[in-house]
Length: 388
Image (cartoon, rainbow, N blue to C red; front, side, top):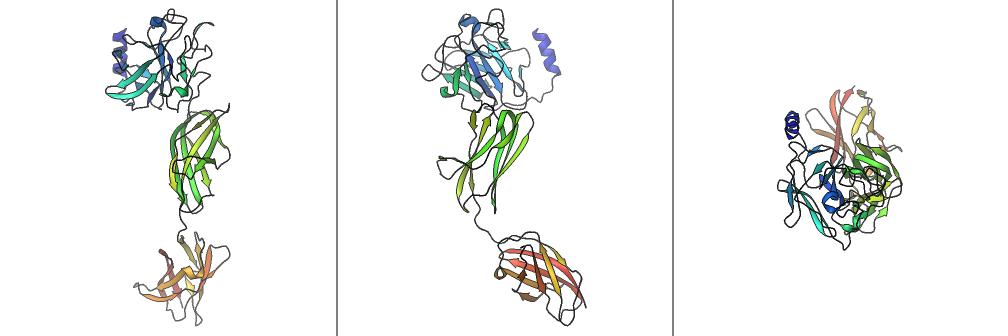
């Protein structure tokens, strides 16, 4: 059998994902079976948090004492992207409590009340769970299951004792748990690929991308103004999620109610259809202070323009114009040599805030000129052709 597995392994591409800490996590443990003996019935479950297949062959499972096993499958032992893998003491379903074991190990046992599972890829520690009878829900005949896959799986408060025998077990009676599947007590996370903020004059624009969603009703955005990131307040309504999706999804929310110059913290709350919630890590943002005028001179019309002894009138169209007063703008005219030949502050701004008019000075000869508008340090310049 091992020679066949090795042959298949030779045919596989050498592009499997290189795991990092947290790429694979421990999500369920049967440390004290009741239906069969410990020797036969112990198992634990792994979950691949990434969107790439991972080969765990040659990895090591150990505790902090002398128990240790190096995985040797005779070839790849693949845990599929967003998939589960069950490792147990006995691969015979007729003797192990009637569950499917993907890999059976030796030389490694689980204490009924206190022990550790440490997962190593070479010398890199991928995951670690240290359970004890103090705050962990350990009991006989019930697996312990990680409730939310985004939470710290080395904190017993984030685990629960399985209360039902779920489909991955065969037979109606026996130990309780869900080896190799998502248990009813568990929830797959919203896989948050990115969460960022862009400070704008009209507020803070938040953008996030998910790589997968499971039973996701939607999101709410929360904000805190404290350094300790406490006292978060919800600043958005429900932003509908995708429900169940393995495709990348994009979301945005503009928070307009921020104080310029204020440092604040944002986090996402995702809500499942059954009401369960999960928080994602917060990001820090400093809202933009009131800034100088920002605009672009997009066009001058008419252009060319005819002038007479009274000069001529031209109009400007601006791409953006915010909080501009006539005192904040200066207009200048340069000749083809770059010499300033005229400057004035007297501008007429239309009510729409997006255009203005200007009367050219008399005495300009036919030729090419440049008209410049300046507001603070912001400058925009366009070419103007004058005809007499």
